[in-house]
Image 1 (cartoon, rainbow, N blue to C red):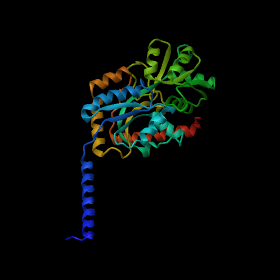
Image 2 (tube, helix red, strand yellow):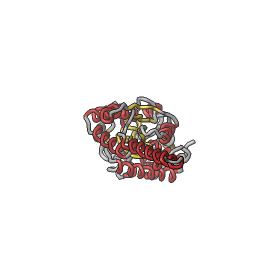
Image 3 (cartoon, rainbow, N blue to C red):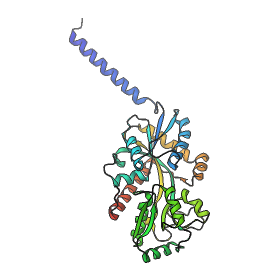
Length: 326
């Protein structure tokens, strides 16, 4: 007969073996094992929300699980991004945008670190900003606008909010052109546009989807676009790079991320593949075109490098221009 000590050792060994088997079984379990959530840190109806919902529909068959979109707006995307960074359920993704990186540079207490807290899956979409002036402006070109700004220091540069991409781009413009401007923040482009059209704001860098109808109707004049290539929606409008301002080549983008170390490597690879397939599909191309945005295809590794470069770029502008919010 075994003594109690031998029985105890056997029980311990059996328990360890069972735990090891359970660990191997869990590790081998296919991902995902339940529904996947995409957090959108903005209110429903915007570009990021629409993109997330298109991807959710296309991802579900490939994942074999439902994909739901959860909107968590507030604090310029900080609330939603922080919630995603803290999610440890292994089935949460984030639809991120420029604001995630900008807010982290503006506010060290934002509650997340883009480089530390997220794994990249891939870029999703991109849209240029358009440098616009009211239809009645003297400025018929970028050269005219710079000359006008030098004659009239402090011209009002409208933007969609303090610390927004539009705000940072206007600050880059002021530094590059050697002019003084007065940034004027609004609660979104819907509040800014009427005042831009009426001439109460001198110029601004606005998202293409928002301003395209007003440019086409003649209420606003486009001087340049910030994309690498001219925008098909605005024939004849030059790029800022072609006019000698490569530092003003900026785009509003969306990227798909996951909280760091919560999704296994094969799960991330699966998501990267599904994202690439979705962005190449006619469904995404047509839906994105309707929003005046373009698919932005980039590998996981390239996306991680891109986000690092963007973070450094925004931090430099914020530091050099002394931008503060709050």
